[in-house]
Image 1: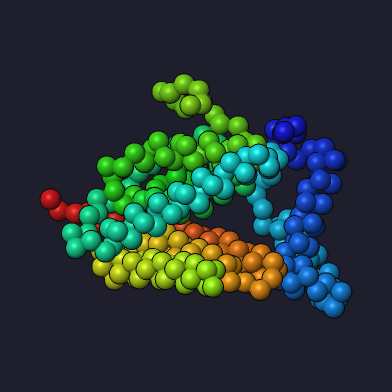
Image 2: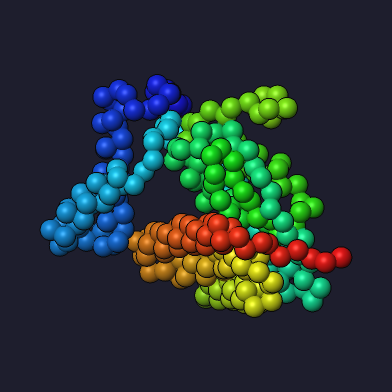
Length: 183
Length: 100
């Protein structure tokens, strides 16, 4: 599944080539979708656009991590759809109910992934779409999360999400102080 | 015919979520709680409308494009929510707390 490259993910000529190919192919696919398959008429604009997009993606991405695992993605998608639906219903009901039940607060979540990899950026993004949580700021190796209801099991939900994101990106989770091993 | 109905139902449901999100935007007490509704309820609303449109789509390209739009909007809205709340925290805006 993951033939984990060296930890930094920077080495290995094959890994670099694989990364470049992955970016080229995904940007090209985006273009094909944008023009609804009419590539023959549009490649004079499309080719430069794809190349510029690849260059931009290299400049914008933080340190690369492990490889994306297809199995991890397949397991993540239904989980994400379900959770974001629950999140929408939860906050929608709070807004519509006359009593407007809110018990907001700030919660600090200690990261178990490295803070400067793609996986963490992704994790921070997804937090805001899950039920009751909003990623307010990422400082060092912890995230400040604003929650709509302090009585929810916030920490457990975030830990579950982090584990799933780590599996998608082939990241390793550091053991947590005071707790042992991955759940 | 059945598909038309399915599309109509999905899109109407989507509008309900947009309505709930907007009500939250108006009723909720501070930036942070408002960001919650704008990101989550509107995201589900858009998703349902996208599913409704996809059911009625004329070609596969259209379906792929619709879901791409949804994905891009999700990335944009969650990023915007994160940036706004980070700025609010940095400016020292304290989150609203219920008084009970």
